[in-house]
Amino acid sequence: MQTGPLKGMKPSVLMEQFKPQFSKSEHKIYTYLTANETQVIYLSLTELCEASGAAEATVLRFFRKLGYKGFQDFKYSYVQELAAGAAAPEQGTYLDKI
Image (cartoon, rainbow, N blue to C red; front, side):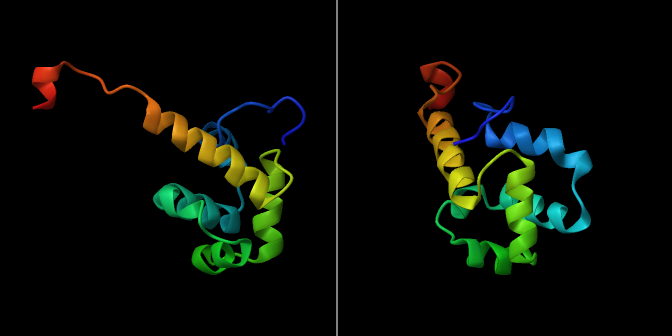
């Protein structure tokens, strides 16, 4: 799990906070993650590297910059964030939904 002051923050929030500090390659990773958020959780590290067009070392550095131990650690937190978002009650009344 994460350690330090970033512990407990949502991965999407962390990525937004660090976005101005991303290198060109890290922006490729960020762009891929945000555009394919539901598919990312099923990818291996190698598949993410190929899909985003970044080297494996760069991808690992990206997740460490965010405060994670690696890709698996990030995926664990990301799945929790996505599940919490899916479980959130919908806004609006019953009439708005039909």
